[in-house]
Amino acid sequence: MPIQTLDDLAVQGTTLGVRIDINSPLDDDGTLADDARLRAHVETLSELLDRGGRVAILAHQGRPGGDEFRDLRPHAERLDEMLDAPVDYSDATFSADARRTVENLSDGEAVLLENTRFYSEEYMEFSPDRAGQTELVDKLVGVLDAYVNDAFAAAHRSQPSIVGFPARVPGYAGRVMEQELDVLGDIERTPEPRTYVVGGAKVPDSMAVIESVLERGLADRVLTTGVVANVFLLADGVNLGDASADFIYEQGYWDEIDRAGDLLEEYGDRIALPEDLAVERDGERHEIPVEGLPPEEGESAMDLGSATVESYGEVVRGSGTVVLNGPAGVFEDETFAHGTRDLFEIATEAEYSVVGGGDTAAAIRRFGIEGFDHVSTGGGAALNMLTGEDLPAVEALRN
Image 1: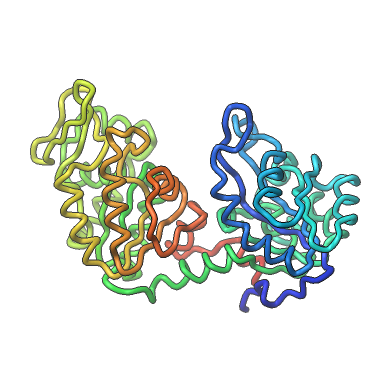
Image 2: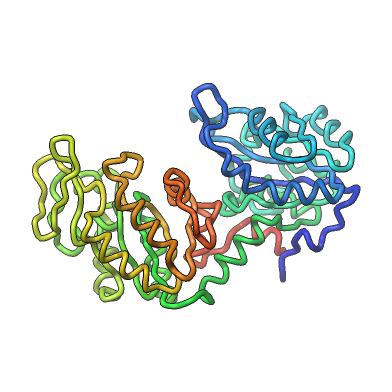
């Protein structure tokens, strides 16, 4: 069954619950350090307000117990600045006062309800039917005519605000959700050859992507970077030294070495490993060819070396489609940002380029790199789509 979008929604005079994902980095005083996720939803919110909708915005910030588990007042103030319509703030999510605020909205007005995760059930996973019976959903559906999900970055969750509302009121995909599904769900129709650059430190997730895209024939080449590359190098018999090996062991990724070995055995000619790596030596960047490993005691691989970036760059430039998933090294440290920055800049030269969200999107924002065809707003959700898994939010809208 196709998913309904805003094109199918009669907006004028209706009260809409709109789930967005504006979970953002915060400064120590709780102010927004980066408003990129808020900007991503401006199109959806502006369209609904311009069309005369009464918009109750649902969102979360941080995780319970975390330093960034804060209220959404700064987000409401920033949205009020970004949009040409008024955005109020409610310090409750589904209380009687919050519901009255929603009921009192006029056409073209919005209110941002309080952090959904201040409510304990929101941090739990449910089936859509059960989620539809939780307090958050049960209390709010009485003041809503329809529900719009624009929170692709949270689409891999089965939480009440994500999957519960479509079980009770008509559900629609916002513009962010619609675009993400169109791009990531249609990756097999993008120009060939396709190259996936897979790195970062979330090794099990990255391994799932590599295995999936190779098995399904979506990737002609996989270029490994970051900790993912280190795991493959260990599987290939390279001595990375105790520091890098210990990190992989401490993260619980030791079993992933065997998984990498199996992938190399089956798809070795399509998986590229680094030719050289960069370590920190005497406070400076020092590059070591793979055949010159292990490094000195205490040194660990922090970035790709220049020779690897050059050879990977040639593959990327010759690709029809490039999908970036994970940074190439410790890009937050300028000394070891070269691999990530250079490789990502080269990727913009490809015929079609996709950024897989999460840390990858954070890196391109940090470096100010532009020119990609699509930058996903979701990390985990993008991974699920790239590995062919269903997204609970999407299934809830479809059903």
